Image 1 (tube, rainbow, N blue to C red):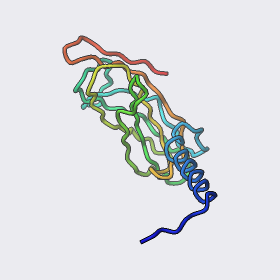
Image 2: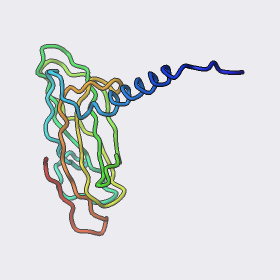
Image 3: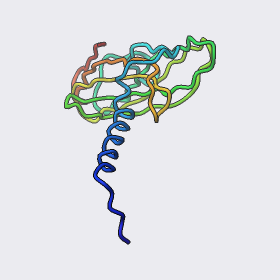
Length: 160
């Protein structure tokens, strides 16, 4: 079966649409948030018992927890997303979940990440309207952590 020959302008249009979709899907977590009525706290690293931790090692379950608050007078649907980026700029982890909050409700959202190698990581947490399309509902909150090998003494983190 022979496919029809498309004019050059069709292919250029396809490239432009693809670039726009890529920007919407992958760049929007860094965009400025809308006035959504939802706020997010600086993420804290917690253990499996939800206690804050400040030492991190390879293979450890690290909960990335932020407090979300719905300041609006109506229910809000949202998606909580966590992204962990290594010191080479590569995304090591990107997970999230969707839920809804009642008016005035406060909610501790947590995603668990298990580092596979030692290094410095940027942990980003943010809230969007959904997975696709992502319309930011909060600004991106960032924390830098250092993960050590399993036999090392301590890792650390600092808020940015």
